[in-house]
Image (cartoon, rainbow, N blue to C red):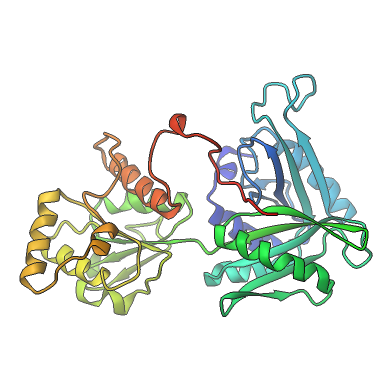
Length: 379
């Protein structure tokens, strides 16, 4: 397993899942439970292809090779397997020097068409909850049984005709909460003396990052944005510059005008915008258009004085920015990291967008109390 395959974005892991389904000899390894600390949380995935290569990361690299070996047995046996790695001890091979200090359960299962609805939903930009039986002593719920849940009119709709009604009823509220929190967890249920453990995996649509501009400094932002799992669109106001060759890391490149961006592109609460045209008039118009969308972040490159000039012109045109508007506008865009190269600037901007996306106030992890990653709190 190469370092490049280990460190690919989650979007590429899901793409690899889609490619591997037709392989009939591929395995999906998923972290389904963590007790204590670990590098990745439940829901992290790795695809083991027919050639034995792994794509994606489920730990910091300490267990991937072992998981590749176990995947061979899963392919040979043709049934799912749960492997537990205890990294808390000092005397056993897993605990020695690994540093995660947690117990990690990993589900390995043959990839087949039963996972196709997940890939299809992800490609459509829709959220989906994957429900997988991990352990069970119930006759009507066996290890590896899978069901799905999608949003419909504000509630979850289950696609699970073979699952017992009592289990679906018990799953509805926690699955709804986990999807809202964009996290995953293994839950234990008991009914008439029978126990069923279900891994509830919230697979959410990737957020959109729309970058307005066509200068050379756009490419690093598109590059870093795609690496941290944004679907990246570069929107150029210069038609000749709207080419995929110029922005190879973008998922799409479109040509539009500042006054037509709402006609060319769709915006919702899962879309983040960065305006970096370096043209005062284009920035002014683009900003005004974006304020009429529900995007939670509008990053505007340039000095604060430049924004104040735009604000004055908007005011002269009868547009007074509200407090809600100002809370969405970040200018100068980016975190105060100190660097000044194009990639430093891109790092600063993408880091700020990521913090807004996860509802975090940027600070040093050494100053953070509690866990780095959010933990679900369910009964």
